[in-house]
Image 1 (cartoon, rainbow, N blue to C red):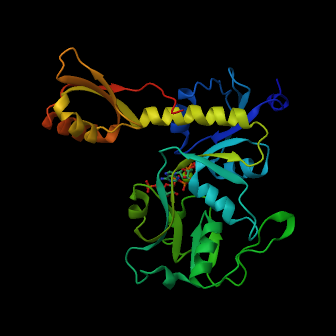
Image 2 (cartoon, rainbow, N blue to C red; image 1 turned 90 degrees about the horizontal axis):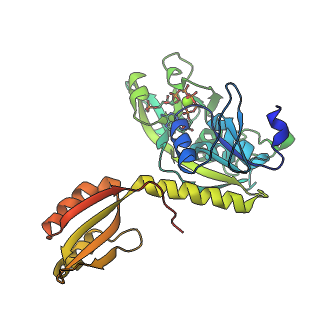
Image 3 (cartoon, rainbow, N blue to C red; image 1 turned 135 degrees about the vertical axis):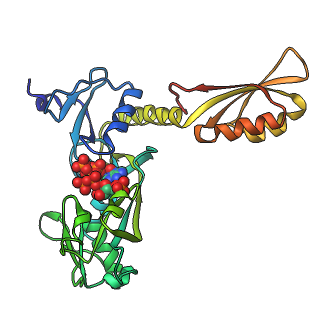
Length: 318
Ligand SMILES: Nc1ncnc2c1ncn2[C@@H]1O[C@H](COP(=O)(O)OP(=O)(O)OP(=O)(O)O)[C@@H](O)[C@H]1O
Ligand SMILES: O=P(O)(O)OC[C@H]1O[C@H](OP(=O)(O)OP(=O)(O)O)[C@H](O)[C@@H]1O
Ligand SMILES: [Mg+2]
């Protein structure tokens, strides 16, 4: 069956086919009940229970397919969206809209130089050799350092030309960028940093951050299927909320209720129910997972008892 012939009446949703964003993305799709089976070697999968087709692409290519093609939704890094937009001809507005931060894939695009060396400021790199996978963002960064206003000019087939008159020599490398300095190809690099392991192992240090990044849900500004886009966005938002929060139940003397609800104000407001014992109330409130240990300590300190913590399987934030 030629899958490409079955895309017409479907919302197209681009997701990372590999790399660091793939696993968490598949979890989000599963939590959103987007059911599919991906055939080996195929980059398209028809969703079984919704009029959607998943398109598996490298994260770096997803902003292009969403912004300039027929793809309605995408999941990629904010750095990749910024890189796509940086390459648009000067003054052309972005064709991609960010719907929400997905809460994973945090990293930073940083200017890096050899640890042992006399380069410590980005301005010392102007006019020198830089290697990166993010040439758009890097050209803009060094254009600012060199005081070049105005950015790119439109060139053939609407792909922006590099920034004119830039002294800094910026070269594209697709991967393993960290080796460029040691191999004498570059004086500095602009590359992603998450844990910093790769940078340290390559004998490099970061001297500036170009952009901070996180995984984001993006949508096309010309999608015809707004209702289904909004439905999928609501499902994904619900899954993220369920991943981020837990439900905390406890009993507390009515006289201490104000102190207790200061500790657990909830996402909107806590639910309070009276207990048979008139001087006691039961409270139920959403608490961020990362806060729950100290929240339970503080609740105990103000006299709360029977504190229960429940996982949230899914949610809709309305
Ligand atoms: N340590 C990291 N290195 C690279 N990207 C990361 C990192 N942490 C998070 N990301 C995010 O993941 C996105 C895709 O990068 P990633 O390297 O995972 O994909 P890829 O390069 O296509 O896959 P691979 O590296 O397996 O070839 C980045 O644009 C960034 O937003
Ligand atoms: O700070 P860290 O946790 O070490 O992660 C950062 C490294 O990860 C990415 O490379 P990746 O592993 O994706 O290989 P690639 O360069 O081939 O994409 C990135 O290009 C850095 O090299
Ligand atoms: Mg990579």
